[in-house]
Image (cartoon, rainbow, N blue to C red; front, side, top):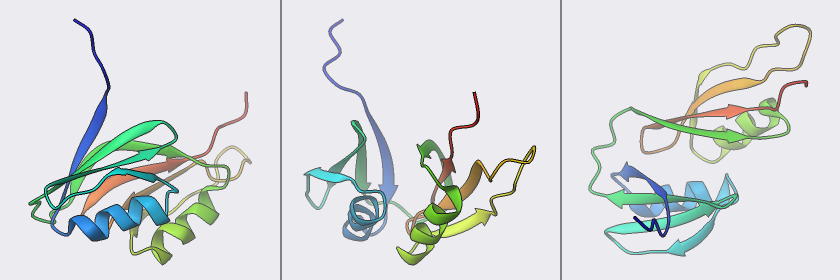
Length: 116
């Protein structure tokens, strides 16, 4: 088998709003845009956003590693997302994890690289 590309598909009731969130908040590049399915590349990974979603809360498994989890949480909320688990300090280190949800109900994590 010759796999050409891997992408992760999420659902959106409002595909334009979802594309804007992943483009504007997470710095993605819109690779393809249509009313049915759009694609946004974030750090070399392709997220397919499929229209026709119901807007229900769904765990995606997506994780975005950032330098500062607290600052990133503020950007997610300012961009229309929600915070479902506050970042907490752990072992005298800054917070390394926050649970978030995009405007379409897709849950994802923000993480920070932990010490070696």
